Image (cartoon, rainbow, N blue to C red; front, side, top):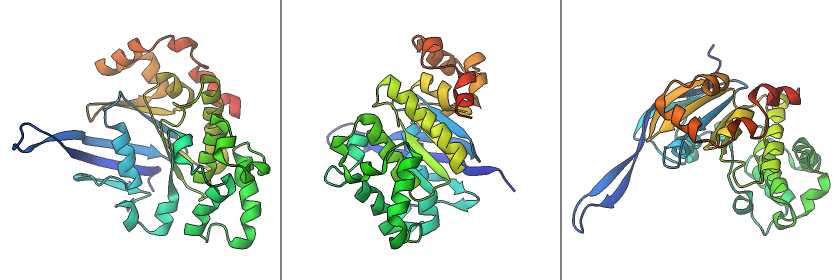
Length: 277
């Protein structure tokens, strides 16, 4: 049996671009061009690239929010189509943590109500009589007191709001988390706390993580393997350690050269994941 939780094969996505002239045909923007990727059980794969490289489009295809023109995406051997056509168990199995918790959490709802929304859609995960206890547990899992459930997102810090976003994803007991620039809106010290939380949750909840980012310092903290995208194409995929010690592709070498003070950012690759154990 394959150890892959997620498999992507020959993924191709294009979007209509601007017209060349007032009456001319629209141009075609090639966002993703023939990408092959695997995410293994209990690993973190970082998908890296500059803005416009296609990495977020890949994430949206995995979530079923963008329909590719070609290619195949499977989760544990089952084909993944658009989100509204996936069976409930596949909808639950893959959850998203967004970049900006301030805009991804409803400001008019309390934290508890936000998390309980997931159980209203998928009531089998937490039956009505068990939801108070389930809410306290999922908040505790992300390092928040049960009392946070009665507060609104505006009353929380940025790091606390992102913990709520992670709790909302965990509420459906997923196997795969897709994190799209999940720490880029946070202060550096808070970034490190959230990354360590994700590493801890990966081990305690048996998670696989697809982590989308442009920040190589973040990659060094969290990733087991790294896939590098440039202009819609996958140019390199290797272990995190290999990427930082001997990058093979010139584009990857350029990214590393452009990263400022990489060795001093946060903590080293060798230490970060070990500190959680």
